[in-house]
Image (cartoon, rainbow, N blue to C red; front, side, top):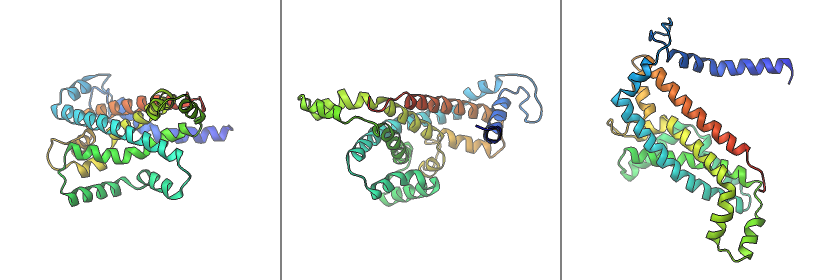
Length: 257
């Protein structure tokens, strides 16, 4: 890498992450002002955890993320296995990647219209189903990346030795693809926790189905406060740890093993 490439890379990273770093620093500002540093303090984190609305919204986000991740991981893994064992198809590939490509606002409107057509009630359950829809594609892509180098002869040997399809899957296939499944689940969990537009459109009225990003949006309309900075710092930390873990799990995989 040349000096100019390193300079370009440094400028790009600074442009992307400098505002986030400033936000994280301000979350520890005792003065509570974006223009003056009043000393290091954890006061805003204490007020954040003492806020009942934030606690309720965080719990809703956790419920939605955990349930939607479990469902999407199970369906996405099965879909990845089915697609890889089937022949190549341009139509199938297009349908698989469509939820990842189309804008969130389009998917949100489509889901809301679908719920309205079915006269389906809105709430946490509708958010969970919506998150499952867009998370399936991400899970499938991550698991398929592992399956590209998978040695299918291992499953054939297992079947030749008398093992049934279920035994072969749980004792051969699943342990070998487990790192990618966990990585896909961590990615789906992160996307679900951070997702706002789809949740906003499919939540319905009232505070009972308010997620953490929706609560942040309602608070930020009146100005950015140190509590919001603290909350954003925590969300960023959780997202970073989950994505870093997912990357390490994918990196540690050995094709064909």
